[in-house]
Image (cartoon, rainbow, N blue to C red; front, side, top):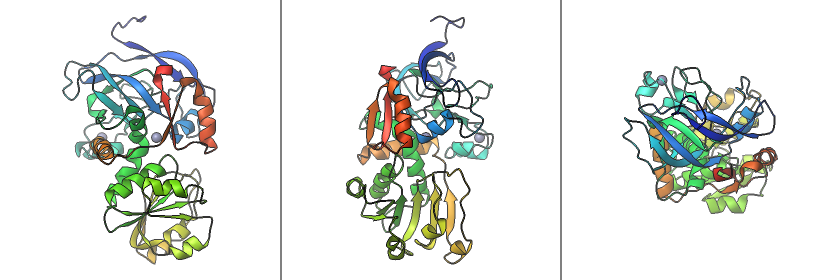
Length: 354
Ligand SMILES: [Zn+2]
Ligand SMILES: [Zn+2]
């Protein structure tokens, strides 16, 4: 190690020097282990669509150089003096955030750190409480405090586990919160990185699952993932046939939808939950809510305890994202392919190639 602080860790990373620039292989320093810190040797890192928004500087305020990645799976390489949750060799994961204030009501609940009132510390493109930029999972090593690390159960392969840390919890949490389960009719809108996992979770929770996708192209696959029904939204007859059908619609698409049309598919008291955010505001008639006491809602990933529950649930029910493992030098190309929706259904970087 060639640095002044002998206990910092130099690590290879894939970094974007400025918005939309191609990735470069370079090195950064990971902080010296604090008493509750864990040094993780990263094995796989998933590519989330929000990595692309961030690396392209599309969400404003991008901190460059940037090392994206918040779907991290690896092995514990070293632990701080007071770590109790993990030992060297444990298989672990890190998701979208790496710290929170620990003092507000949402942190104290132990369930909702993602809604921390002081602002959660994002895994990358954020500033930690000392004002240092955070760098994510396109990296050989990362240091994270133990309270924000989850255990990857034995039944889950590490490459498959990594997308669950964002795509998995983003869909699991709202399905649980809005009680997807036996007797409930749930629609999943969109069948990409999020949607194809949402189908599997909703099915395993016992709900009757319908997939709403633009065309019929993904029908066969959707049924394999556990969907009971599949409808193409490009066919206007779909909206007539399914009127008033669903208790819950989980929208995983980040393009603007005809919100009124989707609200018309809800039963009385039904909820349309959004986990993908369109760049432009959605438009809808308030009457669409009033006429059926319906709700529009949103949901952001999930807390750490729930993320652990999600991984355990996935292992127990053999739920697995479908992935394409790529080399570190293929990430630019992978971004292009994600933008063209040319991925079935999640890219995962093999960090050993970095
Ligand atoms: Zn993500
Ligand atoms: Zn907090």
